[in-house]
Length: 104
Image 1 (tube, rainbow, N blue to C red):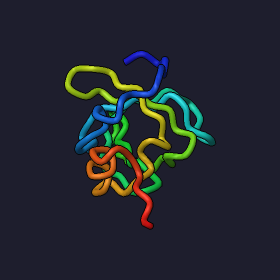
Image 2 (image 1 turned 120 degrees about the horizontal axis):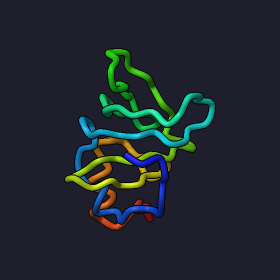
Image 3 (image 1 turned 180 degrees about the horizontal axis):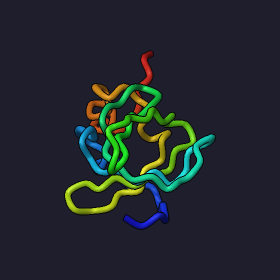
Image 4 (image 1 turned 45 degrees about the vertical axis):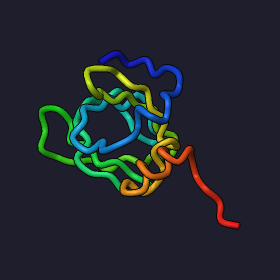
């Protein structure tokens, strides 16, 4: 994967599960030695858990300030951590409805 993180993907690219997808972490505040490549092992509202290639150790990375590339359906997809800052179980619903909804 290239280390260059480009423009924002469309919302439809982020629909569905991202756990198990290959990822390259290009930027993340406070983390040294980037870029890192690995697989998304788990996800919470505020973090991704990455299993780096060649290691069994899992690292928790904050989504805030994250710039990464996911490999989904054979395509590299640039992602900003702020785009992923929803509960994983709610992401598909929110994106399918066109974004966050406000109650009246």
